[in-house]
Image 1: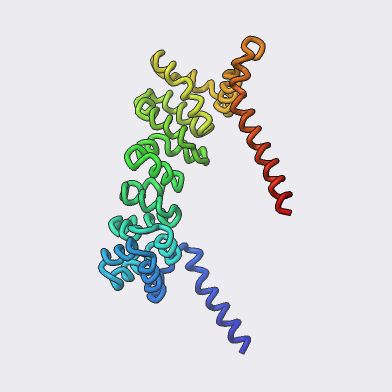
Image 2: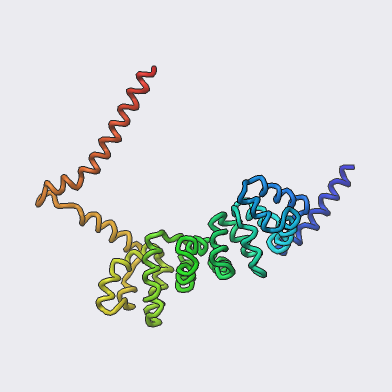
Amino acid sequence: MRVYVKMLVVIAALWAFPLAASGQVVPIAREAAEELVEWMLKQGAAQADDVARLGGRTAAREAVEELSKVAGRETVEQMVRRGGPGALQAVRGLDELAGEGARLIAGNGVRGTLVVQQGGKASVQLFAKYGDEGVRILAEQGPEAGARMLGFAGESLAKWGKRIGPEAQAHLRQMVPVMDAAEGPVRSAFLDGIARGGDDFLMWVSRRWKQAAVAGGLTVAVITAYKVGDGVAEGVRGVVDALPNPGRDPLAWLVWWVPVLGLFALVVAGWVLRGKFKYARR
């Protein structure tokens, strides 16, 4: 009997291996689709309204089954459970991009649903090209501004391979129209800077932006003067330069440090009171 069981396990594994190796999606079973719809109905009015808009339980279950044929069971389940209200409805209008849209929402949750609802197929195509970082930029900058940023600097951001913060995004959003219209060598040097330095480069350029605009715009010579780490180094120097000189103006130096000393005093006082309170309870 044990021999037969082992043979069945081996056969099943051999049958499943080609599917996994070829990347073929595994659709959801009918019972699992029904359970997923039932889960939606239990999440509250918003999810229940989604089921109603899809045409009821049967239509919702059929929508889940159809989507799983192009996206796979696990992706669809993650999409429905993480995407929140409107997730399933959002991907129905994507046609041939429905599977990619489901992967976008499955990986990014409610934020992904919002991106698909706002940007439709265009946002899904950007996700297919730039991944989750593209979704984050689209969500934070909006579909139009985000698409412009990715259309201009998406390849460079992908090479950078790290997230760029909100402040750097704001600077890039301001720079894109100007740099997009710049001469080829200047534009290439700028994009190479993003690919090498990301946030650091954008912060470094932002400190020269107005001065460069007065002089006629950024040049290749200015951009190529950047070295990775210059942005952070200049930021630190800016803080140091902002400190008053105690030899020349001791009063201003003391005023500058008052908030820091006050915070330190509060922390020490809290620590002492905490110790006394514990001792009193004993």
